Image (cartoon, rainbow, N blue to C red; front, top):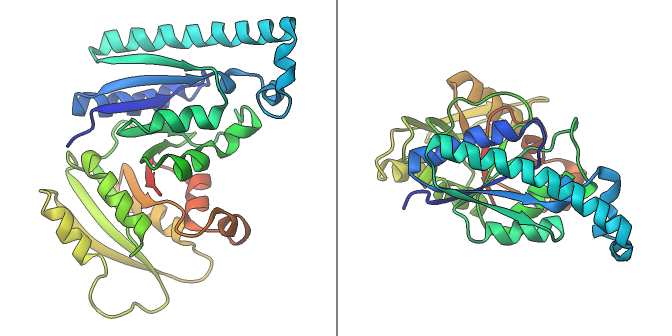
Amino acid sequence: MGLRDLVVLLDGSPRDHARLAVALQLARRNDAHLTGLCPLELLLPADMSFALGGYPDLWALPEFARQIEEQAKSKAASIEADFRDLLRREGLRGDWEYESGPLIPAVTQRAYTADLMILGQFDPDNPGPAVARTLVEDVMMTSGRPMLIVPYAGRFETVGTNALVGWTRTRESARAVHDSLPVLALAAKVTVLTVETGKPDGEALPTVDVAEHLARHGLEVSAARTVISGALTPADALLDYASDIGADLLVVGGYGHSRTREMIMGGVTRDLLRHMTIPVLMSH
């Protein structure tokens, strides 16, 4: 089955256009329905978001609640108008959803019934409310759905025509590979890469079996390995390899270790979420 139901998260920031460009590409290629999702909490000033969190009683103050809600609704209406106009101009099917509840549950619950959720990498220049800083990780860990994360810098004319799959023999990698099949279905080229430290374990490429599996889906696939040492991290190796082959999409499993361990000791997911240079499709 192809992608039929896409959701793109919009917040009125300067990077909305980059997320929309990616979402429109995928919607056109798959004849998919595209929903623009706009949660209230993303539209609040960063210092006002606490009203939805630890101090909900502030919403009982009529004047405070009215002003904040009117500002958010006005901004949402402007974003909605631009989104609907874009759908009309592109001749695409879609709709609009404005969510007034707390951010993480609102996005997670909408993701439950989407083929793919398209979000942006955390942007330090436009941080938004505090809860938004871990939005990608929170939704990834709780929704059970694949996520396409668009970097906060750069333009992406194509996504998924030349894909790099970062492969490890883990549940998360297997999940990401199979969740990405509708995106990879139209790829001209797919490379499956394993990153190894030290001396390779045997002559056989550990990516051969998954490459053969993907080839049975009619994909043009090659298997590869890269060996790292010293200060180079697996995330660096994946991004360097993606640059070398001109990849426009990276597919990886998210959080093979616990989030707590990655926060303390580091990890591939955390590093990619910080330093990605191309769109990344992740599943947990």
